[in-house]
Image (cartoon, rainbow, N blue to C red):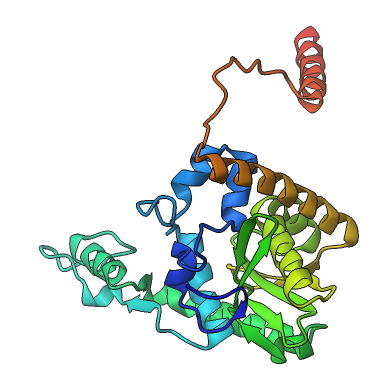
Length: 303
């Protein structure tokens, strides 16, 4: 257990398992599930409420985790680099392309069992190139000084009303006036596109929890900035901040999630989806799209 406030050196395993406060705490992932799915799903995926909750290990998430470790901490301790040349096929001797034979899959699984993130040699080189690109970008950007004067992967734990909340800012400035969160993406880092497709949901709730936490703990009026890094060459980067309207919307969503969380925790009741029939209705844009499509079909068939 740790005390409320900003704590350095908390193991990631303790943060993920929520071994922090004397009661379960709310993080962005759980808040997002409460709003986008239902309390039953939120409870199932909460590691303290359900120790058997499934972990995340998609290829994109693995790339992001490795890039975070190298970029923020300069550490490769979490990584197991696997060279396919060391795992030829048993019968043919062919060098696998990806995780395509029994031997290399066994090496991958052994790495997971050892608490490491397995990555193929060429994939690791791509991650190193991505991190190099990010370093160069940050050094010439508006956040260069903030990046240098910061704490990395601090664990923030605080109480808001009856509930405890937790978050783990990637970069927290020493003056506690800014949080910089690193996001890697297999899509575009173009600020407009990323804001439209990837800010809403988990990311905006993460920002709201961090900003509210600094209000309470440090009594500052902080900013939240995303450093977005593309996972594909040429590994372009961008900076996306949240303006006051975006922050207000995120805080409103967090307040709603907190209300649901407090009710579920106090009653130990975690309802699923409604038992009533939900009648699906087309969206306005679907109707307009079909009318346009129907007009084109009729026009073609009249010729």
